[in-house]
Image (tube, one colour):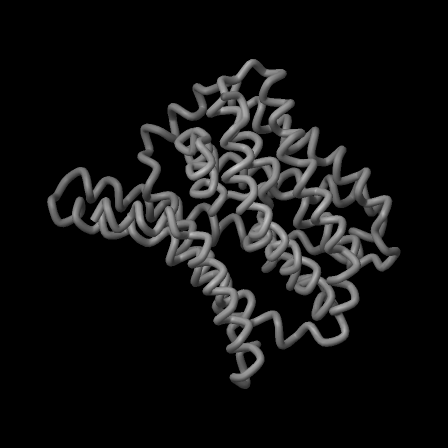
Length: 317
């Protein structure tokens, strides 16, 4: 079972691209895939649940004791990265929906497949995995403030706070509670331990499922938003180059060891598009522009991760 899990993690990049390709083919050949939009939240909740199961509650408590790492992670994601995003935002089109989509996705650090990619890139994935609930809670609290700062009065018209509460309950609180219950079951019975071991095989397939559902649901709705997608691709490419280097510099400023520093670099460069998408879809008039803008970031990022696992792995050697 451990061999199968290692194989899935080592081959996750081709698995994700295969899922994306299958989703695109389905979207173009099978009518009605836009209806999969209703499955996005359940698929995300499953992905986060199987991810959280891999982090023992004791390690989550220990993560709060890693003060320097958490401080560097927060400084990179909620101080340095917003400054970078503000600079990049000066080159965005004037369309408020395009600007909102780019800001929503680039201001939110990833809490799912970044862990697996960071492990491939010789980062301290254990620290990053333990910090995922903290990262998600922090971004849910910080994102509305940053959007208001960058967009001003526009954000009051375009963004409703309700989806943030919904996302916290269904994408954080419930999966985390179920993961804690699963860990208690695993500690008390052999059957529970076996179930937890099988769940350990699911993070990569669950992430692939999310990619399939999101792309199959969104592509049929793009239509006239293709131009918006092309207009933001260079911004995402520039972010993908600059953000990990910025995260690495912050980590070094905090005196972190190389593996922990690489984890901060991966976190800085990897964004939370799959969790942010349901929030964006709740914005009035979001379709097709906001989904197009956000899914474009995911596609650019997956290409960037191929470079990250090779380049970042060499930092600090």
